[in-house]
Image: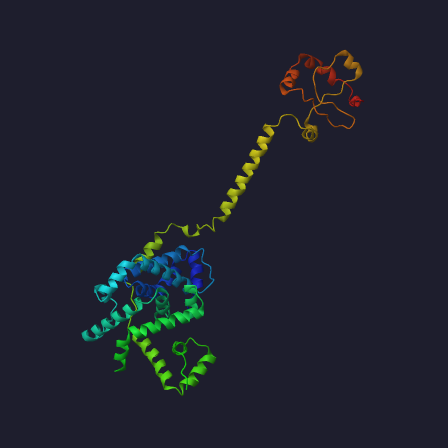
Length: 193
Length: 195
């Protein structure tokens, strides 16, 4: 059986079909929570934001106009909410970055449990470095990298989410990767060994 | 050999080039080890970034979303400004109709006297007693100021010196009431009064 399109699901949700909303929830729960978590670097807040995204989708079910892909709309809502949350907590986040509590208990639940303890420590350290490097990017570059690299969103779609041109997205990505290359130099060297 | 710029190489490594550009870069990479190395470094960076694993929602996440959705009032989604457009239009039309009705009512209530044109249009509803023949006039002179009927059939306006109070007084005149039977007994073919 072919997978129902997001548009079909939205139309059914509009007519009151709760099962279609359930399908949409199952389809996007992991990508949304994951995206929000990478954006705000706080699992609890990320879940609150993802929940708010789903709620807004539900509330807007009768107004929804399929002008662009559903995921463009979804990620735009999530991006706006995440950026607002980051701005609201800017002081706190900058403090967290300097103190680096990211390897603390809140993030341990996202660590793959299969590797050995030593490998796990290495993994934790790697992730911490990557999170810090991505978090240090300017807002637009950070959104572009996370959407492109981790959410596998096409650069054309990213342009619509950020409301910038496609060439601007390519430049944003290039500058972001150049910055990441410098900041993650130790990990790159390590990989060459 | 002149190396390609880094952005071009980055776009190649991340599949951001069109097919013609890809072909050109590929041809260059075949003979340029430095550019090949740069592309490999971008791919290596990509592999390093893969170490950041995605977060899984907690066990209660779905339940919380369902509860939040269920807490929404039924039909609330439809109550946007756009959807209320018809109601706003209806309210504006009703308000407009009320204002027009009010203006018309005020104009009518503040009218100083009878308007000739209004009289002309209301002519069918004005009950004009049958004209008085000269013989009858001799018997009993009229005491009531009332519109005069001309050959054209139009009513002449009443004298502006006759106020509504005076008019009301005239209607109470016993003489007029006393003559009523005589007037109504007059033949209809003499309805027109010559100048």
